[in-house]
Amino acid sequence: MTAAQRSRRSCLAVPGSAPRMIEKARGLVVDQFFLDLEDAVAPLVKAEARGEVVGALNAGGWGDKIRTVRVNALDTEWTYRDVVDVVEGAGGSLDTLMLPKVSGADQVRWLDLTLCQLEKALGLPASSIGIEAQIEDAKGLAEVDSIAASSARLEALVFGPADFMASINMPSLVVGEQPPGYDVGDAYHYVLMRLLTAARANGLQAVDGPYLQIRDQEGLRRVAGRSAALGLDGKWVLHPAQVEEVNGIFSPNQRDYDRAENILDAYAWYTSEEGGRRGAAMLGDEMIDEASRKMALVVAGKGRAAGL
Ligand code: GLV
Ligand code: MG
Image 1 (tube, rainbow, N blue to C red):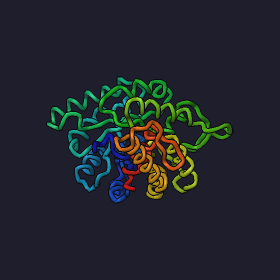
Image 2: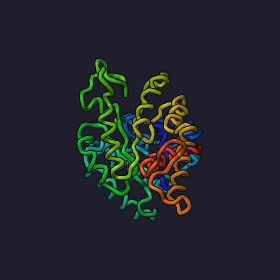
Image 3: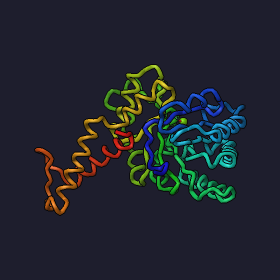
Image 4: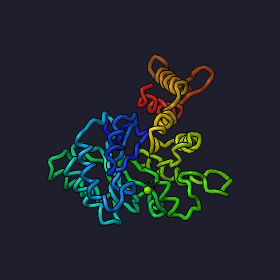
């Protein structure tokens, strides 16, 4: 299975400048981790952090987690050096690069072309390094369809709630929580649906960003539960306490998984020679059809990936 198709239920954010946190990350049961060179790393230690990140990737011990590095955004002076140093130093031990604050398709294309050159120069397999694009400002969301279609390397769109809230002047200080005074629904519904639709229209995964209240399990359950219910593939985690909860929320429960497999079996039988290829298949008292099969495939796919 390629990194593009792999499960992304939990994605652990790890500052690239914090060797102890990097060490701890190896033992956590997350589907993906990213070593951050962007907002979790202070400007004065950006260069040093590149070296830490390269060392940590080459040292291995990451199991089958998706290995990602978040480089700095293209409106800074750091991006090209982040990409060149990380890929030259550890390109063979890297699955994807995450590009933050993507505001247009040209930015993803720049990264795609740069990776093409690096892969050729280093003798790495073509297109072995994927891209994830963070959508985290008004411009990025307005351009999300063209961003999602911009490169065959793209694997996922990732929502950045903190930067997004700041970008649209949402008057809240709690990342990912509803803004005070908004009591007529979910203030993120439009954003997440927009991102999810653009992702799916281009065969990409869709991942929700961080929930910063690391001691508030109830809040995490509520926020992550909404994203999972819409159909997003996973969410960032910032602390070991968030991992199990998030893995569970983005996996179907056993009952739903079993039911999905039963629907697939029943439909396969009814549409076989033996079942007579009847249009209306039944599972108990319930009619199932091609659309039911597709819905069941989504749940069964997530369950199989979670090892149910
Ligand atoms: C993540 O990058 C965020 O801005 O929430
Ligand atoms: Mg951000």
